[in-house]
Image 1 (cartoon, rainbow, N blue to C red):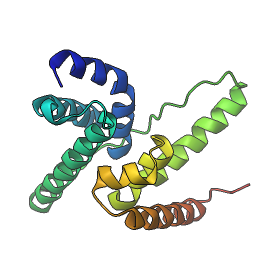
Image 2 (cartoon, rainbow, N blue to C red):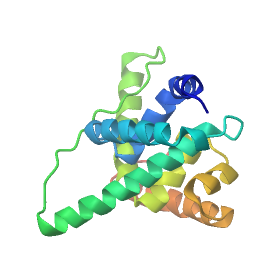
Image 3 (cartoon, rainbow, N blue to C red):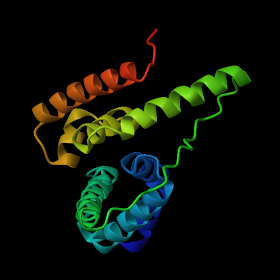
Length: 176
């Protein structure tokens, strides 16, 4: 892939890639910004390996996952030596769909509640859930992105949904 094709591809997928980085970073925009930038830089460095006809978005999301896992390992290593405390950002963007203010407020509250619960899940459950529900990837694509068998993807989606449901119920979220 040449430079112009790479620029067009990143421009086309930038919103999706950033959204995925934001989910990986559990809503912390500073971490998501860094992850997004590192992902684009890494993708540019290996742009020759990106095939335009082989779902380049999935390839780039796989890079983001790899970089995020590396970041988490480094952070855990640092925290064992010198624990650090981070402020959590709880500003989740909820689209305005032209609803009444009360409906918009309820949707924002539900979205914040869901994203906070999702952020507390382990990465092995959160990543497949985000890829499936927020990025609309099918099981085969998730399998390729996460480099795991489809059966593992299915079980992690099932277990992730169950853990998310239990966590939401424990925190008082009422299902209708």
